[in-house]
Image 1 (tube, rainbow, N blue to C red):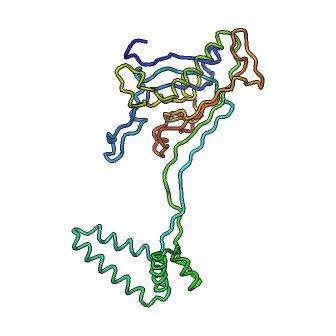
Image 2: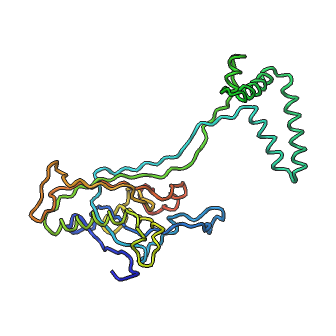
Image 3: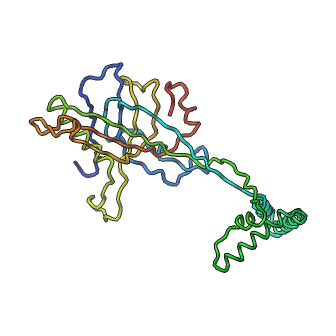
Length: 305
């Protein structure tokens, strides 16, 4: 390979039978990873550009295509994170005081307003025996812990009054998740040519999923390791995208496992190619799925992402 050329390996297909217009298959496009950097999105100045937006599907970033049969198990799972959250009345009151200070036009006014809020909060608690007990528990636990103890205000309050502060429990949105996909493929080459294609497919996946050791590059100091390649998966029917199955965002390959004794015993052809192999691939998307992603898919058919 000439110096400066990208590692393009071409296209491989298994099985090697001709693809018809109604043939369903999985296209795995291998792309050179493009880091997102710190550039802001053009549409929202506070949102950073994503890896997906940095990837340009052109001849410069596409390293090759691998065409495989649709796996026996085709699933997608979407998830988000929700978590329990609590905020008792005393904490809410303290938060209000802090907000008064922060939102004021200047620090002096903020401290003044915060002081007023503190006085009003204190007045509201004077006639409330439960609130006084709670405050005593807070200071009591602080004093005990200062002497090496380990006790929570709620423990003192429960022991003293048989009550605890109302935690005002809520289930709050905690964030998004990155989807993972696991695929299993069976390889049973029918001739020498097909076994060679399988070998090239396995080798191409191995090369693409692993990091690049820049110390072997001419002129490199060896200080850095470059990101592996990434993958764009697409369910296809003939030359078109599948009209029902879900879509994928660009993904990284997390794991690859090859079983060269797919039938349970070791057996090879005369060219040493195993007669049956199993390939397991695990991918994870580089970016989360958002509701707006489905709006951008309107009119394209399928179930979206």
